[in-house]
Length: 188
Image (cartoon, rainbow, N blue to C red; front, side, top):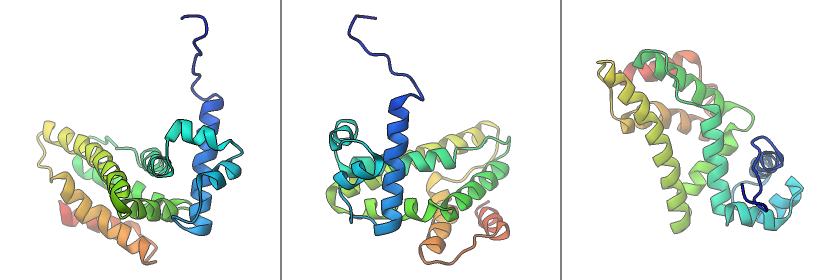
């Protein structure tokens, strides 16, 4: 390592700043809704300088996309139970818990808002869908490698995720285990 190069420590100050900024965004979305706060307000809530946010994320839209992707990935990792039915049931149950949990509706509203907000929002929504589709595809490819018949990733989005998202967005909760399992059964 050259003198003057800094070593990034996972879990160090950088990770704490990211966690604080992400929580500030989530809290502001819950309190005010999407589009009703600025980078300055996020920075103040997180206890960091505006310049730190701009340096790391570049824009509020990029930050919001990162928050949504990070929350989705952390709370709903792709399971590998050994069967497609098991993977889909586990994944659907994780998503149901995620989107009905304390921060879930805020993250879901953020994902919807990002998808419908001008050109930059369209790109953010496309990034969210592309990442989630890529992850789903890995689960489906594993099933095919085991010799199982698997639907397309968009079928999983249409028949499992979309109905749960709609129910949460319109306050039609709880998402019971029987309801979630029924979505998987109908797809398979």
